[in-house]
Image (cartoon, rainbow, N blue to C red):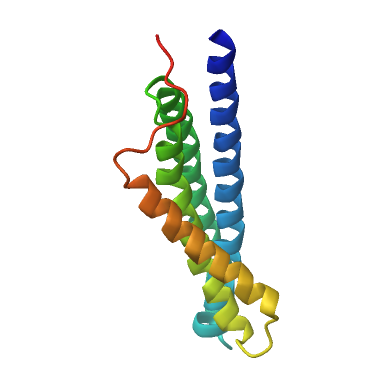
Length: 154
């Protein structure tokens, strides 16, 4: 029975690493989208506004980085508790779904800036997967009966 506990903890930490990597990916994608939007719509030809864009970028990176560090800390604790309460999959879905939806929004903004016509079908497929998986995991997280397959005694 002890072996199953360790397998669940390994699964929990694997899920935690996936959440961290997706959070870093969101930081990268959303920062790229923010810089694109600021450059095209805010700075335009103004020299003064062009100097303000890096400041906004640094503030954004700092805020999202701090939120990401809070997310990393909180999810590690929640996933460990999820192993003990047999709700690991539900807790993973509560984080993974919204994270995918945020990545979808940032990707969509980039797609719209780059031009919808020039984008390949694989980019559309990626957007569809992000949206459908994000919605699917968000719905899965709301399921009251969702538990992991092994109920372990304490």
